[in-house]
Image (tube, rainbow, N blue to C red; front, side, top):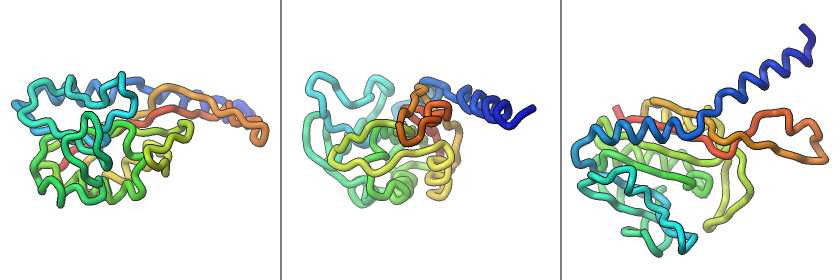
Length: 197
């Protein structure tokens, strides 16, 4: 087998790891089994006035659903910095933490992961969806893009156990500077589901 054939086979294997929506579905299934969970969602400020930004429908039986953002606005219950979350909401208070399209906007996501671990109760779950490949979009800043390995490392270093992680929504990168870029795998999103021991 030639080098080009090996490269193509390796790339096809990596393309097949996209599991659109599976990690979120797994999270929601686990959530359904929890009686009256206390939920904290990060990044809830509504940017598009026509589209709610909270995922309350994922946890309709929540005893508490707290929407947190770094800036005030619609869908925000508490203005707080994810880098100082425990100081704002207390330690070991939540069964679930949700953060969708937030981690790319955090200056130090590894610190936010530690703060999430601090606010979760033992056995608590965190679901994070962020971007692996995506156009720049500042709300108010855009700092990072993540691989599965990066998210696992950040959350495992924070003391959480990874239950699942996956890429979502195959994408392609085109550039005259790197004409072969489209053959390499790229994905719009990457998700992780982790648990506090």
